[in-house]
Structures are given as structure tokens and as C-alpha cells.
Image (cartoon, rainbow over all chains, first blue to last red; front, side, top):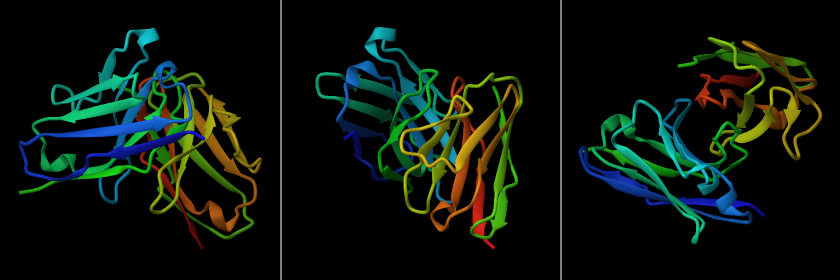
Length: 120
Length: 105
């Protein structure tokens, strides 16, 4: 069974940093691109960014709203994808989902999300 | 940036009715279009990809059609478990539509 479990969310002050993790199991992690999607309270889905598999260079792409502040990385030996969030703003408050896919492919599996609240 | 526009924003329907949701792209996306269902308090779930292919385990009452800039998700006979928010996504540029909420009439 494919599982994705996010962690690392919490309350953080504006301007500070936070790192989210997504631990996966049940599939060959190294073969897949991985994405992060967020959802502000009461709002729709917003794609945040993704990282390609090593086969496709392990490169990343980000939404304009987070480019330069967020960094996605992966550890294929542990089947984990990370989201490093710097210079956080109140507008970054959201439930952050990890999902499988994203390199010109749909997001076919999702975690349950981890809540990030940016507030002073 | 490709903009995805969904309509209507909210749809009030009764169980058993046929439901049609629309998604429009600001420029052609061929068939690189996915539909997701999100129930209250749950993560999204992939329903349709490639504009018309049902994902694993998705009931046959869900169908997708379209190509280019106009897409449709149809639920042939709405069941109580189908009340949710539905999102389209163009998965090359990865942008989502704003969603359509299907609520009980």
C-alpha cells in the first residue's frame, strides 16, 4: 500500500523558517517525481513545487509565490521528500500536502497534510 | 502561465441526478488534464487523468472528456458520497482550477 506521511508543521513567526518532511512507503520512491501542494484555510489547492526523479536530473520547479524562499529536496535512500521554507509570510499559512507525481504527470497519491501557521 | 477556470463555483444537486462540471484552460493543454475530488477534511483524490482515463478504483459513474481548452467531468448519477469539491489541474504547468463545490440541494 502506498503511503505518504507529512510532518514538521506548526506555528512559526513571520520571517522564520520551517522544514517539512514527507515519508513514503509502498512504492519505488526513486522512480517518481514528488510534489508539494498547499491549501490555505477555506481556499482551493495551490501547487507549490516539485522535484524530479534522479533519472530526470532531480531538478526542481516552484510556483512564483514561493520561488527563492522554498527549496524541495529528496533522500532516495530514505524515501523522503523535504520542503524547506524560509522567510515565511502570513500568506504561507496553509495545510501542506505531499503528493506523488508532478513531472508532466498527475498527482496520483496524496498524504493527509501538515498544517503550517505563520503568525506573530 | 496557463489559467484554469472552473464553472460553476457551486452546484446544488439531488442524489441520482446527472452532474456536469466544466474546466477551461486559457490556452491549449492538449489532454494533460486531471480531475481531483476533495471531501471535507480529507486530502484530494485523483479521479481522472489524460482528460478521460479513470484512475485506479474510481467508479464508472465518473467520466471525463475534452481536449485543448474545454473539459468536462460528468457524474452520471450522483451518490451521497460524491458531495465534495472537484478541482481540475493542468499537469504540465501544474496549475489548479478554483474548484466546483457539489452540494446537496
